[in-house]
Figure (cartoon, rainbow over the protein chains, first blue to last red):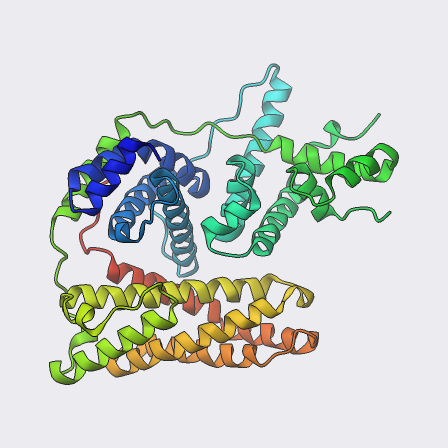
Length: 191
Length: 245
């Protein structure tokens, strides 16, 4: 943690709300990225970021400074994103519809119409599978595959054991394989 | 030399295998392994980051504008059944339970009676609600792991965790019973019965674990714990919704 950031944290813990505001301004874009990667929904990600910042403020007295503030806020954001997914799952189970339309990413650009169609289909299948993963599976997979975090760190972030993270990642990958393997067969089968 | 499983190959893809050098060597010589790893690699390589909405440096200002009023406004007072008992009785019980709850929750330092009495009514309630909510979250993690694991994956650590959760659960259940929080008490009672059974199971008896997991699914306990946790989180959260950015 830089000296400037350490000073802001100390001020915030002493009750200086503006110092906390400066910390939030510094770190919000980064935590939005991980919130979006987990929730796959822009409006939900914005809500998650706000909830995470509020939760960080409420827990500020428990921040011991061993990690950087941004790292600590990142972890809170991941857990808020998981909570949001659980709530979304509960609403679907009870028949309440999410009023915010799910957003699908645009397919990545590839030369040639055939490759465009294939990459679009693959992207669509990926989103479909990720949407069906449990909160734990999706979070563990996003943190491992997209964020590149070590398994031990993911376990710490999610407050669970490394084995549980491994199993969650394995289940996510198995589900992806079931849908994508036929689509990417040309990439690994020899002639 | 034993060929790696698909799970080990997945770990190898992410360079987190404990047999990295060994698997690299096996890949040089085994056609079957090369085919299996190629398929896994092709699938995971295809999972590329998709275009994401951008958030500029000004985004942080928007977030701060949205949450600043909630931080600067005092906690909204809520009518609550948690502290509806006559103060002489209810407060002593709540203070004792709060001490017990924070001690058993493994906090680094338990609050003293003086610390607890210095808190506002709203703060005391929030502490209890947050503690119960966190307990439900930890319980849910354990239940989900049990439901998704093969019998051989349940280890002594899981059973030890269940015994610890059972001890904490009893305190929360008594607090809920005392405060007339009927819904909370019922779910915690059901959870406690399951944790008691789980704590007595031996990791050597796969059939015991199997039937326990079946009962877990029949009772829909994970869903009940999850729903209650979400409801308690809503009570902890300020009542005004945060404006979107």
